[in-house]
Length: 125
Image (cartoon, rainbow, N blue to C red):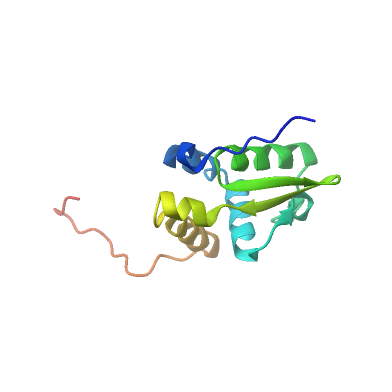
């Protein structure tokens, strides 16, 4: 069995986090894990958005999340339990995960974020 790779929090990068969460399935998996507040088995995510995800694809998604430093995985028998590393990431990059997860929630719910206005002509940002 291959050892699981968990980067040190000092080796976690914004680019790695953004890459890992750029896939809609991984973003949905991570958002659900964070919302649950407890360790979850990979198999809990075999059914996402009314479609079944093959085990091999699911394994790749969890590997990407783990190698980006977003989750910690632990083997328990034949299952893999996954826990989000939110507190560690919040200490390293304050506000990053709440911003990403908030944007994911807004997108999923199909609404515009509160407090946003259309840019007017002539205004530069």
